[in-house]
Image (tube, rainbow, N blue to C red; front, side, top):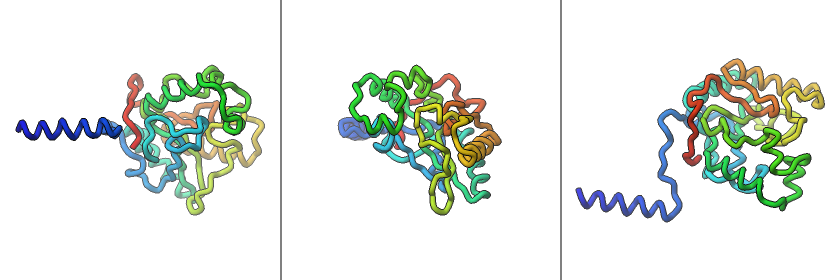
Length: 227
């Protein structure tokens, strides 16, 4: 028995020093990749293709997690989308607390990439993104009940034209913006209708952001890695 405990100690410390997370996914969460694999998983924060220009802390893979109830509800949305020849494309879902802290630390750094600023937040400083409500200091994503997504053609994978890219922090991204074309508005309303029919509520400043109601964990924030 003592030998077994020594082995466990050595293995756990090996993983610690190698920087490998041994954290398990909480029992109340599900992997969308596993339960609804027909979705497209873009998962921008696991890549450098996001407003920070870096892989975000806590994102080790293009995996998407949600608490059980919203995960199952989102699979129902996917079923409805498939009937229309469409699929959900996931930008972000569960977000570790460490990722939110990463965003806050990033906001305090001097501006270094004008091209990224132009792509994502041309009208604001980094800190103003928090002041304007585009980035939260405590996120529903970290409670496992929020998802950022769009609709795409099932065969080609090409996203429908929503008028802006994901995480374009500007009033043009407001769901009911009068500045978008009729086709773009129609696509936004289709996404909104599909999501709301299964219990999700849209955040009016971001056409891509939806939260499931009622939240399974309204007062609890999680910090396991996405891997």
